Length: 171
Image (cartoon, rainbow, N blue to C red; front, side):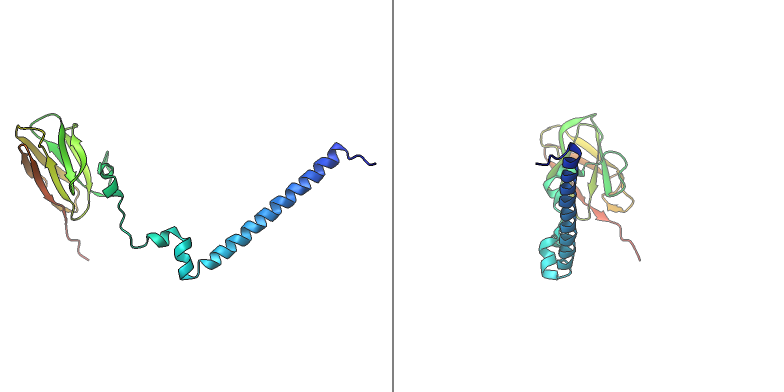
């Protein structure tokens, strides 16, 4: 009876592992080519491609996550509106609403929020009985309304800042 040395057993094991890896990689490449071939047909591409299924759907991220509209420092990817509380240093219960959804409060005296054309801005001061005064202190250059300098007064209710209107950009 022939005994295999330790080195022979190692070589047998490595050859088996190499064969397994080779077959696995080869099978993966064949599957890749087959799936790519299927993607050339429209009905099949719809089910295999996530981006095809998303085509034409509205991105509802900001509807589901209104707090994501708050801008921290210097974001230029979106149009922004900055409102400042004028007659108090902080009001945690004064709420900025975008399309009826709470997006921020005025605990930091000033709030910058991302906006899109047609968004409707309001300030909910119903928690307070005293008159509150807010001012639009900055907007992106492509925003026509609300305008910088606009003052909004709230006394025990909800005040409209207005509908966001972008400037017309010519050809």
